[in-house]
Length: 251
Ligand SMILES: [Zn+2]
Ligand SMILES: [Zn+2]
Image (tube, rainbow, N blue to C red; front, side, top):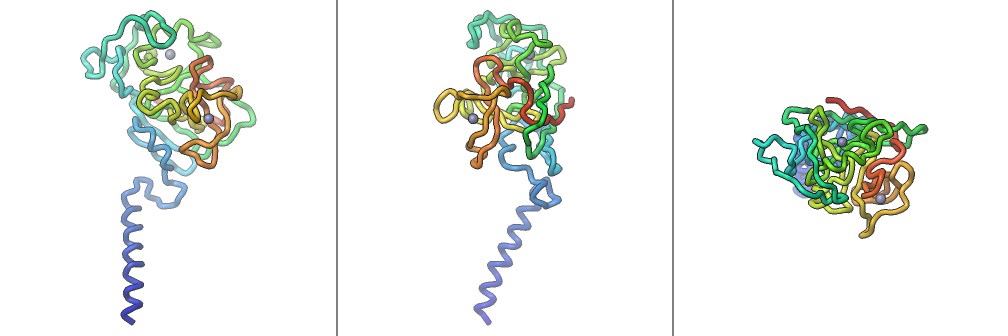
């Protein structure tokens, strides 16, 4: 009889522990599908990340966590910048815009992304989110206009703001590759597929398809997944449209 009590007590304690840990989970409706998978926690710039089991909703302020000449001069992340950019040796020319301190962005992306039958082109607006919460933009300055005239206005970390004060990256987010590494997860496009840095297995990535990605194992997806890579040549982040079906961006 004593023996059976010793067997039951640890079982009961374990049951309590499991229930307590669940009660701290914000996605508490407690089925597995409404739990945000760990990989999304890498989006450290998010103000909230939730899922309804179909989409992951990521909210951010869009403010970069690094210094920029585009912050208001009174902001502690303002840093003067002039001279030559490290991207392409352009002579820096500041655009007239400033980073907003009040914007709020919502990226709604498929939780389980799948390849689309037709590949929609990316818009001239946010096409994804970087792990620091900054929007990712495509390889165009306007309809089919290359970025050529934009390069000169990229700041010390290779981003710049729009006229609506939306700071964004069209190319490698330099601060993220410097702090997380060239092979690290950089963010997600709106179709839910992850975006990685310019290197893989210690070398510059090669053999990308027209969407600028490929299917392979990554540290976050040991079973393999389709993913994009940001490279230092056009089209930089995404090629001929989304590989999957895009969710939505709103602000
Ligand atoms: Zn731009
Ligand atoms: Zn890869």
